[in-house]
Length: 192
Image 1: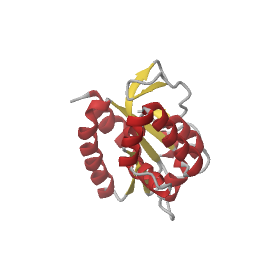
Image 2 (image 1 turned 90 degrees about the horizontal axis):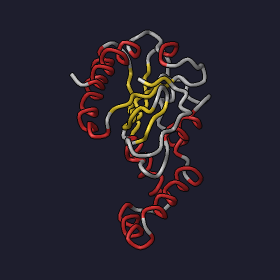
Image 3 (image 1 turned 90 degrees about the vertical axis):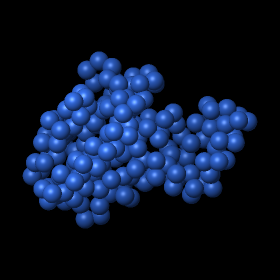
Image 4 (image 1 turned 180 degrees about the horizontal axis):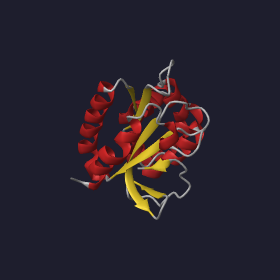
């Protein structure tokens, strides 16, 4: 069994199965969310395991909501009249850095990603029943760092949530997004 699969079933799942997972999912009352880290190359296997985890939790009476950051990003771009095809064309003309800056501006200023995530949270969420899985995080690479999203969600999320994060550990609490970007060491949520 892979390291990430063992952590998913032996560490994260028991916490999410609890009547109220918030005290075990995070040490902070205003941040009832955690990060589940896995190797980027295992994305498709992790997606399959997330589906099975969702089924197991729902069989215990939990209600699981999935929020895809890929869908949030594409919706934000569409709202600004930007298509993936236009971005690909622009990359050829101005380069990846300029395109990444454009997408980052859309997600941080014009169509804030945290608002898109909050809009997809269950409106009648019950912290003892609901769980949110934030998935497809790799879609944000290299446009947007997840540490920004988590900081912006602080104090607004009441439902136990898990951000599924493709990356590598760097020290005790540092994470390297996609195993490529420099490590971000200010993650406060619990890392599984």
